[in-house]
Length: 185
Image (cartoon, rainbow, N blue to C red):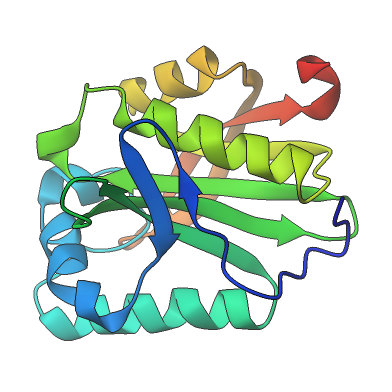
């Protein structure tokens, strides 16, 4: 088990329907399609994309985060076409052996169990391969679908963090959820 959170290469993960892989610059149009949809960015700390350059920048930022060992973000693709439809991943809290988890999915793929399948896979990887002790997710209060997803995965609410997030020019209250390794054993 790895506990220093350094990976020598980007892990590709597979599920029944999905391939989780590293995003690359060839995915820019697909990333742009996801983040140019206001339904997707409604609860996200990014503004709705207006330019393809924003997608290139995000892909590079995520690659850099992996390179320097502070996080990992998998692109979510359906196996049959390998076209990116969303992403999910972790930002490491190395000292505490924990991680913050984030995710988004193109709205045309909502309510099909895709994110449940993807997150179950990365959580298993995080706990079994990376030695995580806990994973935290923070959700805007009116993002009911995300709250239900986290609860379905076994996360427990830790309460509301008042004005914990600041993006799009305003503060946001966030509900914090946690999944501990001990809950899974």
